[in-house]
Length: 138
Image 1 (spheres, one colour):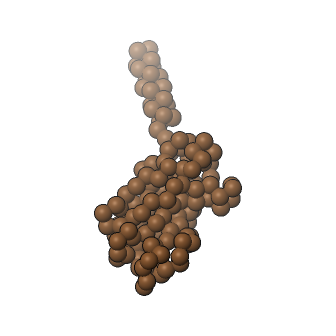
Image 2: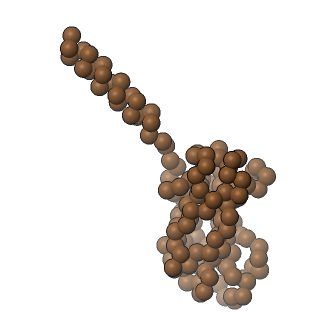
């Protein structure tokens, strides 16, 4: 009888713990090779990333770039729902990880996001950056 109660208690505890762990989508790899496009953004050819958690900023990580100065100006963007996007930030070899907030935080979740970027419009030549992004905080 005591063993049965103990096993029931352990099973209930395991169920509660397993339900309280949120599920996160994996980071998506990106890579840009861009030349001067003025102030227009270019979308990286990647898989989208599904935003699950409301009120969480996104995550953009760079593993390195050869762009001088400011580097790459990047953001996350959704093309299906009124162009939902994050604020844009500069990523270079000094600023490699940022957590950009969504412009409309209250309506940002349950959507697919892509990464897009550009280089400083004063630079000429072709520059690369690569890394990972996630539409939730990781």
